[in-house]
Image (tube, rainbow, N blue to C red; front, side, top):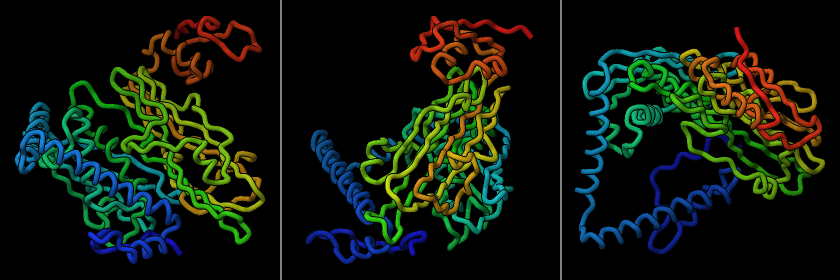
Length: 430
């Protein structure tokens, strides 16, 4: 019954008399998780109220009757700072392409041409795939938002992001493309395309930005929807879980492990998930060797195994990517590991982006992708490689194969705790 959700015109959620109960009932009747949905809505109401009270106190403190002039100045400073950063770049046209997994072996291509002209930048997504019959399409406003964010993050990360930082950035995408879909194209999982835009733009701008930009990340957030709804299920449940792979290696720094980028969504603690549902997280740990090798290593993904309590069937829909197309490295860095979505007992691949029915005893394994490496892996100092091995980020085999470093464990073979002094490492000569 429940598909993409309700399309409501602008309506009042509350009046001076209190909540509009008919609207709440309408929303509750048309979503899978009514309590959580209304909780989200009223959390936003509460946040607005806290913000309004704080704003009122600030205006009283400084004797302001209006914030229009202050807001205009803040936006103007953001605009001027971004324009100054653009003027510091070499004018020209910069291009890039990438491919995401798409559906059933039919990938989705994204293409961009970035034209820097003085203090403005024009970004054109001509060449991207046409809109999809599946729910991964992106509306133009979403495309504009992630594009503007990426430009600001690349050129002026310290500048507040507001309407001012949007003004120098001009975005276009062909009507009917996956980045500018035509109503009523399905868009429920638009992040599976839209989250790739910052990495695409970083790749295009890399040669233009002094100091460089990060390698490609695992990009699209992994979103899995778990349900138990058999007629005999004592407490039917629907739970959406978020998880992240690794961020690409950065100029001068390794990529961040299991960190959402460009989204800032965080995963819920295991204890919360297991309290709300009969799901059991049997494993949740960093995935060794998943970060792309490089002078600055890509961030690691994670391995998660999930089962359930009880004797009832259950389902999962894994809206994930970077299984067929892992994050590439840059400047000689190697790709991050591709993702995996499998039956934990048989290692059989499970279908992605569609409903998968599971037996009561099934255990699902998710192996999140890693970020791409930055720079030649052989340039990574021996002590950094050793540190990665000691921490379990890189195996001894991968240290030798990719980094040219032989790492040997010299301590007690039965020891559970293996401090750094129980290893030795030497550079292997080519």
